[in-house]
Structures are given as structure tokens and as C-alpha cells.
Length: 178
Image 1 (spheres, one colour):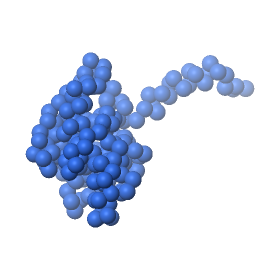
Image 2 (cartoon, helix red, strand yellow; image 1 turned 90 degrees about the horizontal axis):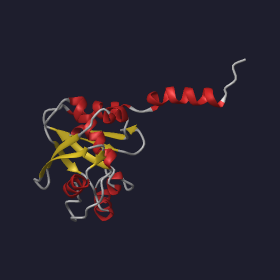
Image 3 (cartoon, one colour; image 1 turned 180 degrees about the vertical axis):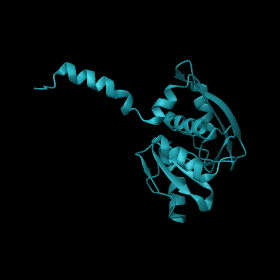
Image 4 (spheres, rainbow, N blue to C red; image 1 turned 30 degrees about the vertical axis):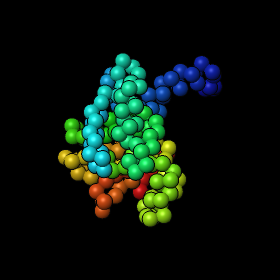
């Protein structure tokens, strides 16, 4: 009789833990430092920053990213989800690109999001942009389908593909695609 004892359960759970970690978790864990480069298409601002080092997110670097990804219409700033940065870093690693992420949209204030939602069916009323958990991007030297596929393979959240507008949406919400 093969009874599942507490000890056996714990041994099996420990053995399975690496399998439960998604590709994004494994990729991020393998990187002692993480850096990103951005070019915000609406403001013209550029930023290259090492946002994770010495085993921790770097507060000054995160503040710089938060400022860059602010709602450029209102000037409002929020704390962006560090997991979103890790997702972008994973995409960068998978594509091999060293070009900056071109930012179409980062954080959106509730007012901005509501205004855009009224104008376009492509803007969700409950958008994760409002929570600092979403970003719309492209990369100059990476074909859009390849960028989308890299983001999808990481299973770090939602991935939207907007071929007609030449960008993808990535977020740290539940894993889904559209």
C-alpha cells in the first residue's frame, strides 16, 4: 500500500516546485542584474536603467521607470509593477534585442483611461494600465509576431497583439491572449 504520508508529500512537493515555477520566474532568477532601455514615443524621453541588482529592486531606478511610464497626458505617476519589468526583461532575453522598448502607453490615470475608452473599443474600462500593471510596446529590430510569441512563452500575464497599430500589450494579470 502506497500511503501518502506528510513526509512523502513534502518530498514530492519540493521536487515539483521548480516545475511549478513558470518560465519567467526561472529566467528572472538566473539573472543577478536586470536592466532595460526605453524610448517613450509620445514624450521623446529615453531611459536605460539597471532596475535589479544585489538581489533587490533598486528604488531609484524604479522611480525613474515610474516617471518615464507616467500618464503623459495628465502627468500622473504611479508605481509600476516590478513583475512587469521582469516580464519585459524576459522578452528582451528571448528576442536577443538590445534596442530599447518603444513605449506607446504605460500608466494611464483613471480619467485618461475613461476618456480613451469612450473613444475606442480597443481600450478596456477595467484596464490594467490604470493599476501600473500593463504596457504597450514594440521593438525596432524585432518583428511584432516574434515579440508577441516571446511574451506569450513567458506566461507572465496577458498578451494582446495589435498588428494594425504595430504594438503588443503585455500585462501582469492572468495569463490570456487576444
